[in-house]
Amino acid sequence: MKTIYQFGRLAAAAATTAILTACNTAPKVTEIPKPSMSDLMAQATQAAATGAKEQAVTLWKQTAEAFPAEKTPWVSIAQARYDAGQYGEAIVNAQEALVRDPNDQVANSIIAVAGLRLSTRALADLSRQNNLTGPLRTESQDLAKLLRESLGETVLVPPQPTAAAAPARTPARTAKKAAVKREASSADPFSALK
Image (cartoon, rainbow, N blue to C red; front, side, top):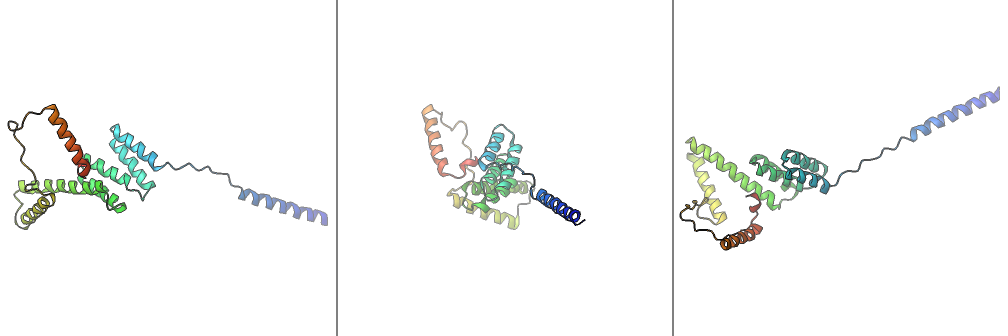
């Protein structure tokens, strides 16, 4: 009887060991490799190039979530929103880029120019409604003066030359003007926004 009892205990111990061993050997889960930032940015850029702007923005947002310290996806979203005339959203996304890099010229340029475009629209609407009076008018004039001084201009929006006054363009003059424009655009952070 004692042998049966010992055999039973031995069988119970073996079963317990087998169960515990089975618990420790969980099936191996293969991890799916995380795509690199350059892969995600390339996919988004390709989508934007084919005209799928919203798909590109979605991919840039996914990139921003996967790589939260990176400014590049935010700058791309801001530029896409700016190009679409969605200046408020462009400003918000450019601010996200500036959180990551306060010296980013493109993001700062987007905020400056998009802000000016929004302000211009709002002032034009107020002017049309004859509500640009009092302190609002004075503050607008002060801001316009500050902007002129910052840009080194006497007028914010120069008058357009008339067609008769414009000299005929020759190929040499056009090429020279294009070269000057390229040279100026490399130093001008606003050139990417035109």
